[in-house]
Amino acid sequence: MSTASKKRKLGDGATKFYGVRAGKTPGVYTTWADCQENITGFKGAQYKSFPSKKEAEDFVAGKVVAGSKSEDKFYGVAVGHKTGVYEEWTEVQVQIKDVKGPKYKKFATRAEAEEFVKSGGKVAKKAAPAKSSQEDKGEPSAKKARKSSSKSEVLKIWTDGSSRGNGRAGALAGVGVFFGHGDSRNVSETLGGSPQTNQRAELTAIQRALEAVPADQTVEIITDSNYGINCSTVWYQNWQRNDWRTSEGGPVLNKDLVVAIRELIVKRDAKGAQTEFTWIKGHANDPGNIAADALAVAGSRMPRSS
Image 1: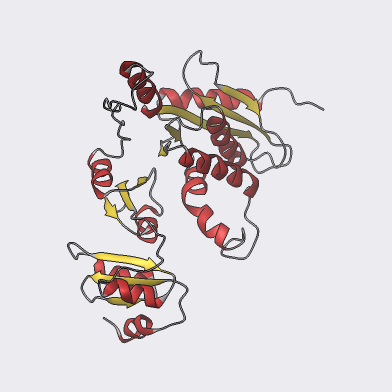
Image 2 (image 1 turned 135 degrees about the vertical axis):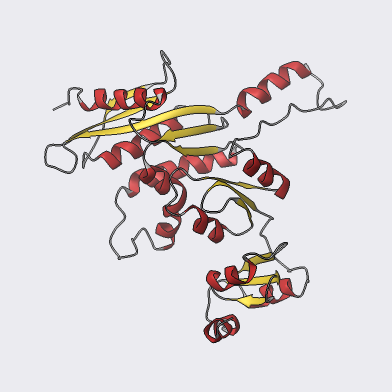
């Protein structure tokens, strides 16, 4: 380990402390880079982040950290630079950054996360509840199983945005959401407000898709917009911490839409529903993407209210 790393390990000025209980060099570190250096390639690594150095030191020493409210979290990365199960969100960010169509999910147990990775990112269906003398009274078990299955099944939704003259004055954008042929939930509409950009149309399509389904319905949003996926799953975290300012200090574009999407996802999380995102190459003969694109283009051509 470098001298600089050792100094950072012992410093007290960090806002987050990483305790490495099992790793190349156990100890407390103040940067994720130093923590990662000591766990990468170490089988059975144990590490966790804490708000105080004392808590991190207790963790390293094998003590029960008093007052710790953090529950065990296991992140399965099925599509990323390096697939696997991780225990720190900061490490997950490293594995999914700049990846087209990353697939990852948080779980309460390592076994669930490992199964997610092995399946290539497929959302596991929850089994119907087993019979119990009290819980099943008043409702046939078959009926309960159907209810459980209907909500745990993954609903695929394709979204797209289109902007004629994108980036120029007078641009006209449209929103497309495709559930299936003849589905009443399909959306083809003009993009409201301004600016009439493709990015706002893509985000609005994701918002419309989530608004169209019950909050307890697991969904897979399929889009050709890496921007939309990253805004909804990764970038918003730093923006929130920076009071919705970019790394350059400027205001985050399309904050209103990102906030709206995140609020919908948080509500879905509270209901136990999963919100997955899958990137797909645009205009590459995927029927759902083609249909969503057609709906978005049609929306961009619809008459505008004066």
